[in-house]
Length: 42
Image 1 (cartoon, rainbow, N blue to C red):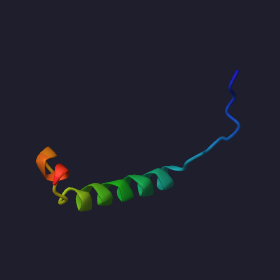
Image 2: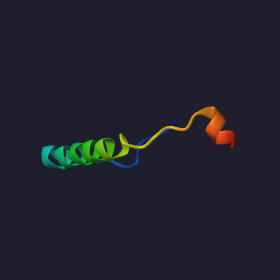
Image 3: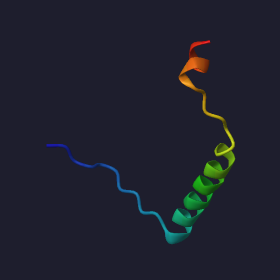
């Protein structure tokens, strides 16, 4: 049976920092354009 060998204890401050970083990434990546299937094949 599998057993977790690592335990991570995140503080509230660390989780807030991770959340902020993800928000920044989402904001920056939102401006990227998605290619249509036809453009991928070109």
